[in-house]
Amino acid sequence: MILDILYFILGVGLIIGGANYLTEGASTLARRFGVSPLVVGLTIVAFGTSSPELIVSLTSALKGSADISLGNVVGSNLFNVLAIGGVTALVAPISITRGTLKREIPLMLLASFVLFFMVLDRVFDPTATANVITRSEGLTLLAFFLIFLSYTFAIAKGHPGDTHAVSDSPNSYPLWLQLLFIFGGLAALVWGGDLFVSSASSIASALGMSESFIGLTIVAAGTSLPELATSVVAALKKQPEIAVGNIVGSNIFNIFFILGTTATVQPIRASGIGVLDLVVMTAAALLLYIFALLFGDKVIKRGEGLILLSCYIAYTIYLITQL
Image (tube, rainbow, N blue to C red; front, side, top):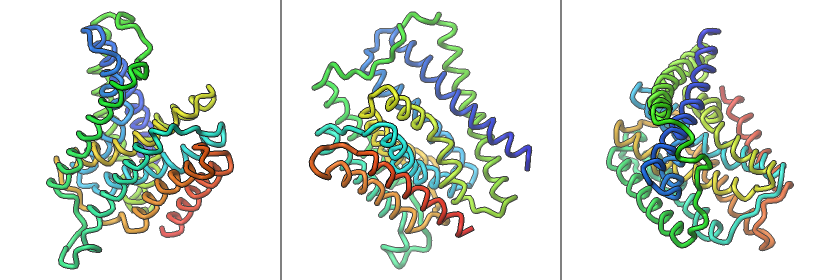
């Protein structure tokens, strides 16, 4: 048990470190060869911050731990909105742009509803024998992701100053070190993902917990650490509006790209993730949207942040009582 906990912590460290170095190396290498900061920000950096969820979900599905795979995405989306959004708003009220309110948050809601209907086969089709995200549904999610990516590029072209640029100079590292960052980061991600999933499954078995509970809580929080760090630092630097883009973008990425990729490689059989978990995930996205609309000021205040965080604590307590 102790060894599994150590492996779990080591896996988290390898995943976060690997994602950081892979992003760093790939970004500087791309810019060395003349790729624009905008393209780097929208592709490599975005992928890098979501690679922990991707590695864990894909590894879990391939190892037959589908509940960890799906629970990771559902739990991460819940953690992003309720915990990260709540904590960030408590640090500093979150300003939301008109574009985010009209486009990105509704798209996050759409992603949540799409996942809701894809997972609950037995609810919407009485003849279904199991809840499964099939390969064709995975491809559908990837198609949504391509539309979202195309839209993001189109918006970015209309706002050339918003480059999401990586701050480092393309020549800040020698070529050999950039390559080492890329391959070393990738190796750390793969190894960390393997350790993370194996140890999480072992801990769940030893404590009598379900894989869905581990996926919805510990695994989800662990893989969301990069987003948590980014949002809190942004709030401390008096840039809380960055947190919304971080939260909303990550949730869209999680459902459309990560689950789409995972289900395309290996269909995901959902047995432990139920109606309530998906309802809470969708309700969290809706709550964020409602708070942003309240009083027409497009700001999530500290009181609303406290409500978000309280909802996450209440949901976690409920999960614990169901063990």
